[in-house]
Length: 262
Image (cartoon, rainbow, N blue to C red):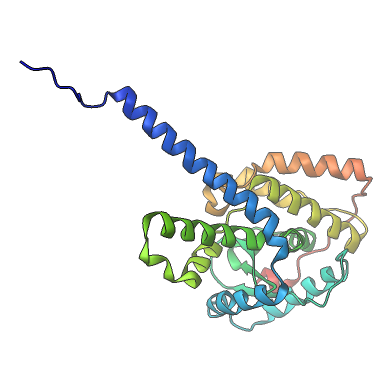
């Protein structure tokens, strides 16, 4: 019998090919992330507002004017006065009466807060820490990174694989926002920014770590959007280190406004 001059590849050869492909894809992902991190600062506010005009209405449909939303916007306005870099941007807050435990920053200078999150909060200080955290994402332009990376990846896949279904960029942006996940480093930076605003507003940082203690004790893993975030204990440790190193004092907490408790 004549020996086959081209025997089928072995499992080891298959493994090598797969490893090379995975490594190549990982390298592309890394390159896209690095490119986005540098280019995101060049996105002009006008372009960001145009993107917000597409995304914000989808969330606004779920939020209706209410005393709770009005109060949340008043608190957000108070925090804005302490932003280190003053600008003509006017942040707004949309309150969605749904059990989802989440808050997020989206293009269009908008913060979304769900009722489910408020039910986990016990003081105004905790709430202001969370709002300050979301303002930190704006300050670091994190709210644009996930969307930009998603769109860049879709374009890359369309070029490489001829994916004709990548025509709807708005749909991709909406999906990226709805499933927004920031890197652990970005979350910790936003925590630090929130702590700074908390100290500026109250002249102390009482309540800064209360929310993280509560979600750690009540089941951190049961809150889907926190899956990609640093573990609550890591965030507590970092914040307590910052509180000590910055010499922040711990004062008395302000009760959560009654309209938000209801």
